[in-house]
Length: 497
Image (tube, rainbow, N blue to C red; front, top):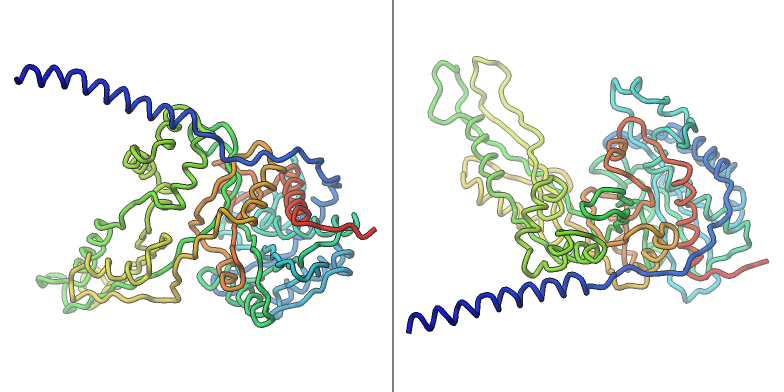
């Protein structure tokens, strides 16, 4: 009897294994591409050198914001006057409003009042130069030098590059006799680089103004994820990720008190060690990693384009979810994509080496994954600490993760098709923004909010973002202008001459 059973198993197990291999192979190699295949388009004629000169001129205007401190009004007034000189057709044909003294809202009136309007965003302020690093720049950061095929300087990428590219696109479309079917809004905030108060004085006021007027947008497109070149193992094509959501933001203050005294007579309980234990407990009980709907969609969109073992893994997440999570968890970027992250950022206690402090305080910064609420993270932290002597309270102005915008909408389809038209070598997929942008202030006035910057970047370029030697290539800048122009024209324009 036993021998017959074993003989049966000797046939069954190989058959099951063969069946599994067949299923994996079929799902891997028969999975069709999800990329749109638009017709080739003729690139819009551009005087790229002249456009680069205008961008370089914008870089020279020092609209520098600091944390919680927007750039001063005179710098933005200078920038407004610069835009007026450089884009005369735009200023003649679009209505310009100055919102809250320094932000700009342009209205390009459409000819069809039944068509829902769209809004393109950028911001005019830039981050400061890190102290002591200005001498390390190849070219001075505010001279707007054009050299070696690049425009160099602070803001050339983030975010005057996008702002000026949008302006260039509109100026060119007007020169070509184009008029939009639906109304197009251009919104340029002035305080995006002010840390956790980003957009409070600019984008938030513009969104409130639109809401007051009863404007509801088909979609908003702001800066966001990039076109990554060489950033994904097994894929030899650039990957253009369109941000469809942003993580939330919350700071928790952990504090405790203890008996102060002389360090030569330490009591059983001390403030610093008590708080250190609490922080260790929180770090040891991280939020669970998960390949949720958005991340799964991104991976499955890329799967048919990738090669090797990664194609097998991503095409069969139903089986290899634990393996893929394990691989992603090996990098900080992968972990941030899969979970609500936490990072202790401040620890304050004591002021003399021989004295025991009477209190200790620390701050943990959380970036919330869509689906993880502020309340749930707070409760999880309290359970992890499990010490009533440690006070845990939110500080600042936290916010939830944004809603996940649709990827089955006409707006998303239009954006990803435009990416493929202008960057035909790129693979397009939805993605998650780890940081935050001004666009979160527009959630209530738009059907969908997307975050995408049409900038090509390799891994070694990422350090230039808010760092030294920020730059944009002339070739890429021309692509940016053509991207915004194509996105607007594809939404149905009419010729007026």
